[in-house]
Amino acid sequence: MSGGYRPSRRTFRLRFEDDQYDGLVVKVRSTSVGRLLEVMELLALDIEALTAEDVQRFAGVFDALAEVLVEWNVEDDVGQPVPATLDGIKHQDIDFVMDILMVWFQALVQAPAPLPATSSAGGPSAVPPLPMEPLSPSRAS
Amino acid sequence: MARLILGLCERFGKLPSEVLAEDAHLLQLLAIERLAAPAGNGGGW
Image 1 (cartoon, chains in turn green, brown):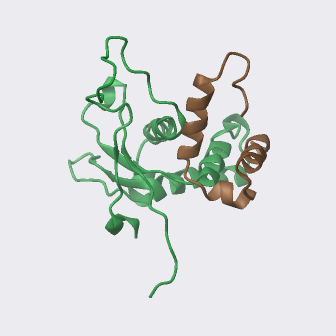
Image 2 (image 1 turned 135 degrees about the vertical axis):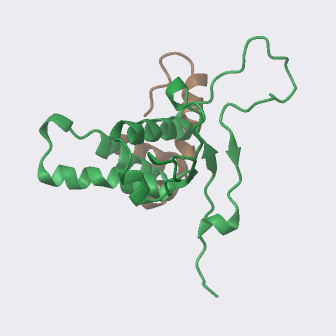
């Protein structure tokens, strides 16, 4: 018996508004309030005046994404799938990684967009503003 | 950030360690609450 209890985290399929990411599928899980605030603090570092220590800390941003990245369909230059791991993330363009992080933040902390004014009252909306899936126990390991 | 964490501790009667371990969904709930708050009464964090 392992003894401990690990709370399950929600998973999201991120929705990218930018046309350049058409076809991109990224599934990430949620995180704790503390971890999210840590990452937000890292992203607030002054990029123009980074010290060596800052650079090391900033690498924590990649670690944070690797912790929550469940799957993606990113391929390398020769069409091979890039693993959804820290190593796979490190081989991506920094702007791409930052865009994923920003959409992840939004999915986690922003209020869902309001339903359209034409929406009928009382019925469930056809498409939830933030698609979520229950995290299967096998993925929690 | 400190104000946010301490405010949540006070609101839920929890230690900072407990608040920080909570799912980040809590922050989304706060955002929704702010949207629903009357003008001038929604900038709590």
